[in-house]
Image: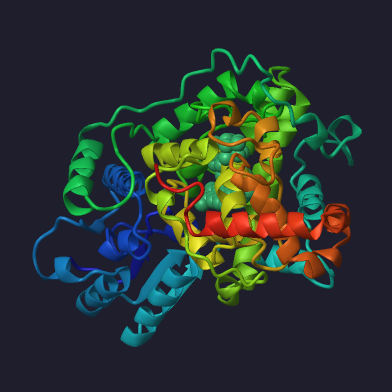
Length: 519
Ligand SMILES: Cc1cc2nc3c(=O)[nH]c(=O)nc-3n(C[C@H](O)[C@H](O)[C@H](O)COP(=O)(O)OP(=O)(O)OC[C@H]3O[C@@H](n4cnc5c(N)ncnc54)[C@H](O)[C@@H]3O)c2cc1C
Ligand code: SF4
């Protein structure tokens, strides 16, 4: 396959025909390069749902490229021949660069540090210039984030988000925020009450086509021991499906998104969330069009401002913010462990077999669908590992492997920073800690659980509640320095020595699996 000019490298999370890497593409002289590499599914042992989604979406994108008449060299995992033995993206690219000898390699900014390093060193070793172009999918560049962060003592989402609302004129009324308010968080904490959510809109489900079916077979054959199941696979795998999923969300769920943003309910994984993270992270949808769709629905009077703002804040705010954190803090960020947490990840994170009902629900649905909503990730699985004291790098590996939307730039700051406080407060102003009563209040399955969230000690004490007090005891001196934790830490002083000892002993029993262990 002759290539005289540019080789355009497209990674599995860059499936956008309009990406910057294609600017100036000339089908007569340039060639697109894509590869399914074993290492991308095995370096953290990805779940079956995640592997299937990436492979299916990549193969659908290959079809779109061929339709657009852009010449393509595509390596499949099930190819035969010498290239098939090369496991990593880097080794495959290395071999092709030697053979094709392009004048230049062009790619869009990658989504993780490891891959960036790998491809950069390959291009250097072969002596081909590598041009990395800005990712236009995002509202901001890493440089924008650096400029915002410069000179600030602490980084907080709120100021960054307000700047972006103004700069991109999103939900603005002249120079003021729409309806005079930047933030509707206080209105967005409702629960479903004792009656539950009632009938919920159906998930936008895309039945596997021939390409996806082939991928599912491949995953079963090649990654049989990887976590999770594929029976319910129905994620959008191409642009048309992603657009349909966006429309369905806006029509059916967005109006109640804000109100129930933090709520949970047993056996209901989808609620009023959008389920669009994987489509956005693969770049099947642009963040801009998603934000525009939400704002348009508000302006058309179809959804309340609290919902449109709550949703837009997640994308224009959190999503851009965590990307800035990742790229300005890597590679050292990955190693941080401010609380010196050293425990292993409990085995039931890979099976769901535990008598703690909230964890059983969240882990089982994660393994089944590759999805859990934000409050489950933060306040069930993430809270448990934080309170237990699991090493943040092990928690990171779990989140990166199980979720369909997991790409390191977004997963790592959320896990290590926001959820595990491993960065010592760079992402979150205080550790997100709570007792089991928080989970109960937000609609968790405490009624059907072996434990009681109100109890801290004794046989029926909820492990979250015991571990919360144990966490405060273990980190009392560090937390006392944090003004936002002062009230919580003060309560420790009211405990008797006997109470403290009972908490420590039960926390030990939880850590060694005698409580909350596998069913
Ligand atoms: C420990 C932990 C790990 C996480 N790992 C990931 C991950 O690997 N990939 C990922 O995309 N999100 C991650 N998140 C953020 C968030 O939980 C998911 O984006 C969300 O649950 C995806 O479901 P949804 O599309 O239905 O989101 P919705 O609730 O509908 O939210 C709308 C969109 O906002 C964006 N968003 C919401 N919260 C965040 C956030 N905190 N950071 C960045 N973007 C956000 C997502 O693109 C999401 O699709 C993580 C959060 C935590 C606490
Ligand atoms: S009692 Fe505790 S462990 Fe059980 S569901 Fe409630 S919060 Fe979870």
